[in-house]
Length: 147
Image 1 (cartoon, rainbow, N blue to C red):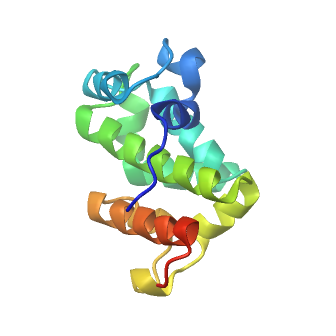
Image 2 (image 1 turned 180 degrees about the horizontal axis):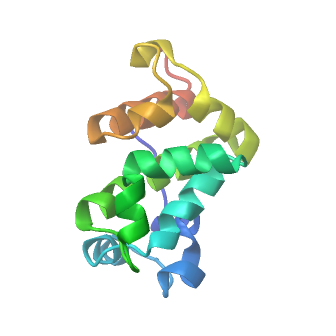
């Protein structure tokens, strides 16, 4: 069982009301924002939550949206890019919720994990199934279940 995050927590990782233009208080509002295309700034905000190094931030951003495409984009990400950005924000929000410390969450996200075939939770979160796997690992940590 995966602990349920508040949509507000995911919205905060995306940049909150300042970036989204409105508060995210429900999954419906979060879904609506994703379907309409998240602002480009949401991807920058997620990258900043994951790393304080600007080169690492850019590298992560360009794994979600290729560099040339990102630079051409005017204001909003496409639906697939928005979905990937939200998924990454969801995993980040959960890690921050589990560890209650941004640096410890960053360490977890950047450390290869044996249950992920030696991939990091961050790398795994680039796909929906990988994100689910990272969420399940964090849920077992929360509930004290064996690996």
